[in-house]
Image (cartoon, rainbow, N blue to C red; front, side, top):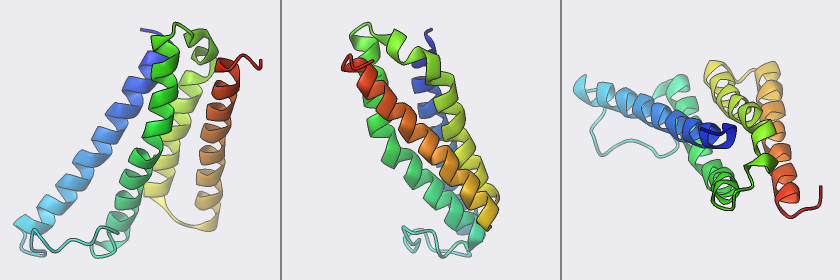
Length: 136
């Protein structure tokens, strides 16, 4: 499996892990009769601070998955993974790291770290686009 394929599968797996965590949190609220199944806010602001962060992490994963997955799939489908392989593991680590940091805290320092990881991911995506267009 190429680094690009691993990063793609890893991103998908991470998004599923976050989804399962969110489903577990909501299921526990329903089973303990703290919330009705149809009463959850899509913002997560009704399930505590961690629940709110988990909801945002979940949304952020799927909001960014389309661009990242499309680029990696394009590289794989066109046999151009040489353009993406060198940064694929770093991209995945930044994606997972951003989520973990977000889940840990929203203090100023953690938000700075999270933003750095977000910027790193997007710089990698821009670099990949340029490489795939043959600019580099």
